[in-house]
Amino acid sequence: MKRNVMASVLSLLMLLSLCCGCQGKNSDAPDSSRIPYFDEIFTLSEDRPVVLADVAVQKVYPQVFADEYGDEAYLIAKCSIQKAFFVSTQCPNRAILSTAGNSFLLWLKVNGLQEEYYPELQELLQRADSFIVYAEDEPSWFGRYGLDEEMARTLEQDGFNCRVVEDQMVFPPSLYINDIYMWSLIPIIDGKVDGTVVERAVEESHYAEMVYEIDQEDSPRIYNGDTIEEVYQFLEEYVKEHTK
Image 1 (cartoon, rainbow, N blue to C red):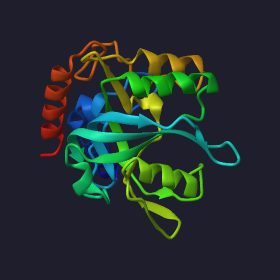
Image 2: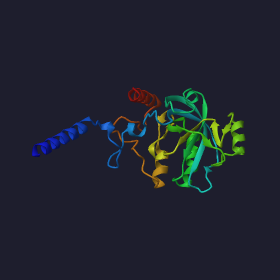
Image 3: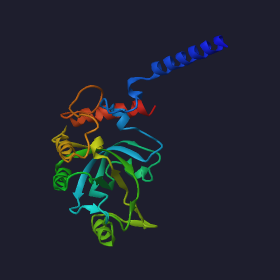
Image 4: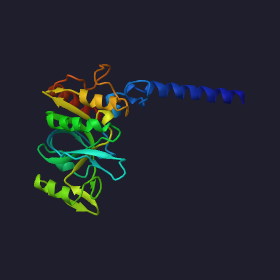
């Protein structure tokens, strides 16, 4: 009996040792004791309709789109794809979002931020050269958040052919950024990464801390000051490495 117990203990210790040894630094789960690695935030999952792309804003709609209870609020912009680095097979608009030049609606969730920063973020959307976005391709709910007949007419005037099916606007495509504090919207200004406006809006709203420090060079990631060429090279290599 004692021999069997000892054997079980030794087997358990060996298993634990193997498990610990197999965990590379990028496979650790995110925790609050360290800054998460880039691939813990920007996961290239085929199980979710995620898109990683460089997009240019064509028009920012002036109103804040919110539900009647004020629980959710969005800024909306008409954007075009500059370069798609990754578009999941689960995306309903995969063909459209994979092609440079195609337009879509970007929904930036801002509830949790102080309202005084909404105009600053809208100005940023208009001012930046482009944005690296990590977003989800989902249909919009027609009749909610101010997405109504009047807004549909505005979208039609802006070149969209709106299509509503069972209270969902399935066209134009909508990309949702629900966690701005996770750097899902990385501004490119004057050819370089500049995340200062986003960082200040999040931190001064006491909404959350930015998930990783865009100025801290501790592991491969995107940093403030990176040129657009460096960002493209990094993301192309990142996608190649994580979609093998």
